[in-house]
Image (cartoon, rainbow, N blue to C red; front, side, top):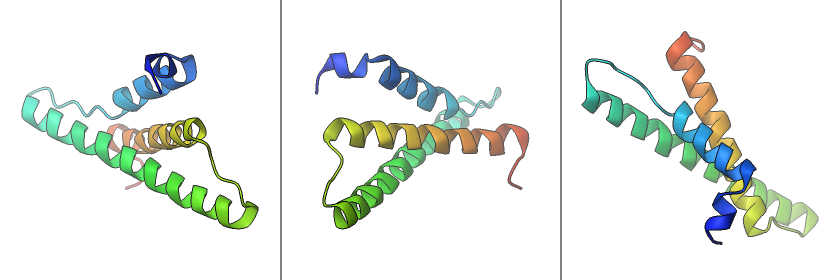
Length: 97
């Protein structure tokens, strides 16, 4: 895996969306902004990674095949983006309460 992999359009857009959707802006408190944004960034990444690990295990168990490294990372990335979208909807629009 090298820099060219990260510069592929689908991967680069995924990383950019993941970071942007993880931002929580508090205009009066920079520390709170960084703390909450970091929590969402790490949390959504770990959630995407965990679901991908479970999916890969089930795939290996039932089909005797598993995801290759690129497929695994792309799936984890886009699941992290989806999680960040859900967290953004909840934070900015009060959905889910």
